Amino acid sequence: MELAALTGAPDALFELGIFYATGLEIEPNLVVAHKWFNLAAARGNSSARHYRSEIAQEMAPEEIATAQKLAREWLQTH
Image 1: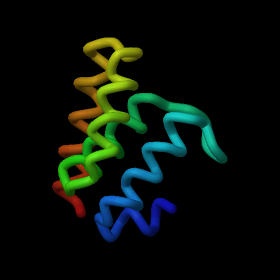
Image 2: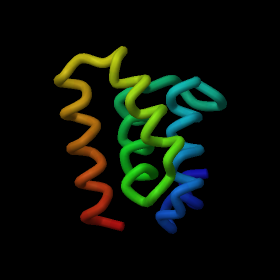
Image 3: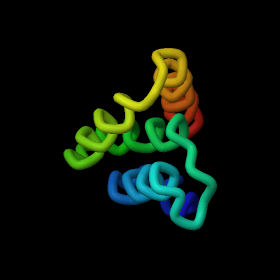
């Protein structure tokens, strides 16, 4: 799935967010999930905006800031 996300396809980015948010086949990680939802939302996936907002309610401000930083770094390299 991460290979598909390297193309920047919004649906692939969204699916990675789902995997990390729910722990499907991957250790749950809300910071990483937020990062993928943020990237998917930026590329037009409206569901990602909703999910990003939902998990942000469970995160500390520092975690959200980290997720945003990771998203910016990903954008710089992809």
